[in-house]
Length: 453
Ligand code: SF4
Image 1 (cartoon, rainbow, N blue to C red):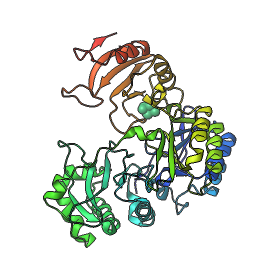
Image 2 (cartoon, rainbow, N blue to C red; image 1 turned 90 degrees about the vertical axis):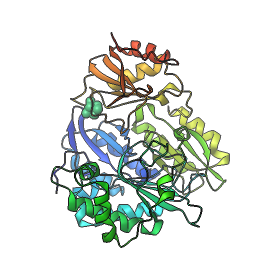
Image 3 (cartoon, rainbow, N blue to C red; image 1 turned 180 degrees about the horizontal axis):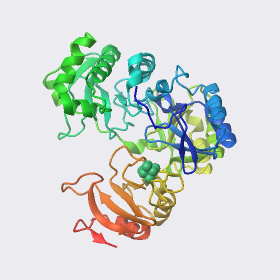
Image 4 (cartoon, protein in one colour; image 1 turned 45 degrees about the vertical axis):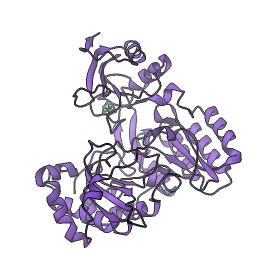
């Protein structure tokens, strides 16, 4: 079993601003009563602040010294712990990403909610999974329009609808993302939905069979053993014949639409709506959390829940048509942005120097400054205090990487020329004002040599 320094519900780790407690949410879902429990808990035992993470979980910050046990007990009482709360690894392995609109997205090929619950049970109940890294993660994509497709996952499944099958199949890939564009890596195989749990178990065991002590992610095992050998090991273990061939290789997923994370969208039943809103920089205080809980409670439908999203936003589900306008208004009153016109929906930032000793700048404050200067429509900017990129598991179109207090290197992926890491270096050592000037002139970006501020 690998020791871990990652925060969890049962493992509160120290940071500059106190302890960090990460609460992993099944499918990103939080009930109103759980939101109220967290609001009370962070007021009593922490700093009253909670961040939404890029894996649609919650991170409670500023846990007070000596309050750790009481906080954990309050969270477990609220039903936020793993199936077996006596082992930290049972908490660590709860990494199955689904669409925040799973089961409700009008464009989905498949409802992933039951299958995702099966995979979470498998991860928590199989004793061998205790040896997985807390970062080892699965993606279960039902083909929803609202889906995060940019985060690489160790194992991914994505619904596909071959013309000769009545039911959707699930395409499979390892150490990557479902292919959308021609240049993306093809899916490796496909299976029926009913075969996904057995195949997942076989792939997890294969990973654990082949992984050397230094291998924590599927990409490490593939680099050492090749994809073909991983599948050749897993397929007989699973007892399933994988579907391969041209239809699987040619398959491309329909593009997702991240703009659906904001505002009101009709659900697949045609009766209700999901409504998305963005707390500034994915951070909420207990008052906001209580307001969201009350909003969910006020709906007429028991399915009205709070769904955290990997864009660090909140999605309220199952809103009656008659409640849509009032719900949008309340969200705005709570300080959340519900339209992409708000520049705060175009910036994300890590904890920064007020919370993390590694940060070279106060990224949170600087991100607010940048938003106040305006960020062009369709642009997303990520401010990171160091190269670890905690706020984004994928490369944002623009990244400001701190180099010192108030100074950043600006990178972009919007340049078609070859680049690595955060993209091509566009400007070196710029202030937030200088970065804003460059971004706001970026309709025709100055992709010449990087300039030094
Ligand atoms: S990206 Fe770096 S500076 Fe920011 S929170 Fe993560 S470790 Fe800290």
